[in-house]
Image (cartoon, rainbow, N blue to C red; front, top):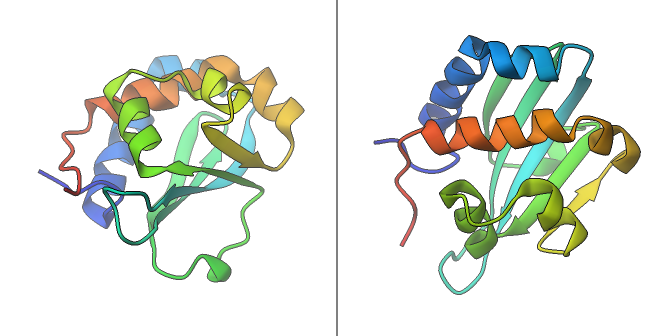
Length: 135
């Protein structure tokens, strides 16, 4: 089972994204790459990062990131580990998570809100990846 935000996890996630007709339709006009950031909290001692290049309903590239200063994405979505776990477990909606401050977004918020359905599908697909969470 792949560890959360490992290269193996990202490969499986991209495979499922690229197989999803629902995601392809919802994000058919989307152009923008992301850095997803898991911030440490009482259950995680160091941050985790993945880069994902999303373009017209497909994931073109993705990988775990050791040094976030080496990527310059259009968007950054970040939150504490406990909130990421709740997001992937289905207890937090990604858009409501932004509105309530559980997650923060750098980048064009209006653009992301126009693609709220695609954002929700991204999370639904992440839930399908068998994930080993750090203790």
